[in-house]
Image (cartoon, rainbow over all chains, first blue to last red; front, side, top):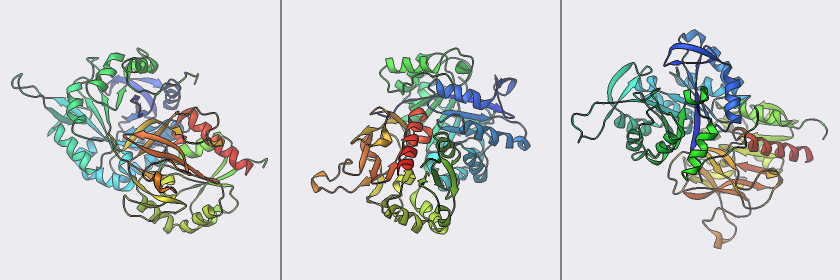
Length: 264
Length: 217
């Protein structure tokens, strides 16, 4: 039986893991391969690196970090942030990533999805979608969400569900869906958003944005239909361990991969 | 042999070769990346990794002059491990794009049947259909990491078994909606649909077992 995955996300800037409130007040949190190995030992099913390096000329640092991570942690690695061309994707895969996530660049030029999928297979193409819930005109209206880009700072006017359909048609092999209005709030995942997406596509959906406790992960899967759940700060700050999240999921009857904890 | 087994990892295009190199090295192999048929000289085993579609992969093997040397290697029953697409290429053909593949195992690669999600991405259980030393020390039903939409369906010898994934070459099966063959073996040939280089401790154990088999060959 296919396991529901728990995925820690690491923000990486200039080759270091950082944390802050979405790109501001960044604090150095250490060497990415070290943290990656720790999470792998603690039972992470996959890892996501989100490169938030501001200066394009320092992107080479990311490739070196990806390679050192691939040599330390024998679990899958997805790299997002700053991939704008097929050549960028090739470089990241050659450095040791298994998947690449496309976000702003895919919204600007959706053919990037089909070109990357044609070259590397759709299983390597994750489309990351940042969704902002729109205010409802009346409580009876079904909720709608708008695609936002550039880390949530720029609205596109595009409907999330329409973009989901288009991205999958073009070759997205997986969707990483972040409820940007929940991100960092600890209000829990937006299960309505997740259900709206998982009920219309067959590709796996990774839930992101808003996790506070283990029960939120359970709800993302049970109510939202998510195949995987992703979080950053609650793992980095050791508020909850990956094992705790998996134990809650297992107790709710969800299939998870349980790993005997070893010291990294 | 007393020395580290020399393993040729076939490099036929972009993709993550770092993890397979690191994983094989960490279990005692001496790894080289091979780009052409001459590169196979002096190696003890061949590993064909890869993800994606069969037709572009076969095109690249053809362009690099690797198709016939690989067929000869397989015909001579020398140690071989195909991973993911590298397992699918062992079959006669792929239904995905009609590609004619290496033909070492009778059968065709087809889209997973009844899958609730596609691609099949994530950790899933690998259930043994018969014993083989490549799985030594690994629990039956252990989780391995998959990322694919197609899988090889061995053509069964017995017409009564038609449509069932398990037959004489099937080492293990996995269920995602329908059941499919997730590992094959015949002689010195092994194919796995999952990624041992990305499957944590059990993945490394499987690769270590493969290296031990090469050492003993």
